Length: 182
Ligand code: ADP
Image 1 (spheres, rainbow, N blue to C red):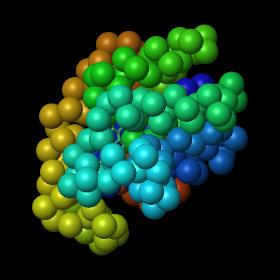
Image 2: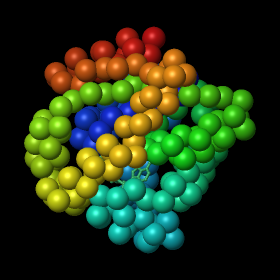
Image 3: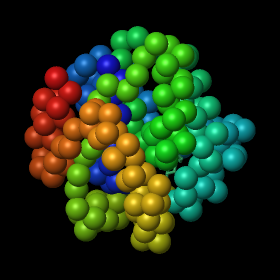
């Protein structure tokens, strides 16, 4: 299974991806975490990514696709993979198809976590990560609307999209996600 956890910033993708990966024994790949690690370690990719992440903008597609391809090839995805924060653009979705088809695989489920924007903004402000200031949150929500949300239609047309209500306790939401992928 190749599961994409999809949704706006602050919807709970990271928390749920971690739980789902543990429950199903799959590799969890978060592009946000990968960029934060690269920035912390001051790698070449980290240097490129820093200004985008700090400003709440998307890191360029070619850089992002490269980090995903390398991680997937290093870890292997034959036991399945939970993608968290990728793809976020049409070009990334097509890059993902290309990476997976080279491994004779394809996206099997896209879990679209839905939470209203007021709740999301409150959650992000409370989390207080470096890119969780009001201005940067607004940028990230705008980027989500413009670049990422159109992928809902793209995956719906393929019949792999599952909408999951993201409000409730962490346990309630993970139970919903689990039943959406089984
Ligand atoms: P959130 O979902 O709350 O925005 P993430 O950790 O997923 O948090 O992402 C943090 C930042 O990392 C994004 O604002 C963006 O700059 C960068 N990033 C993460 N994933 C991608 C991606 N697929 N494409 C481009 N940039 C990304």
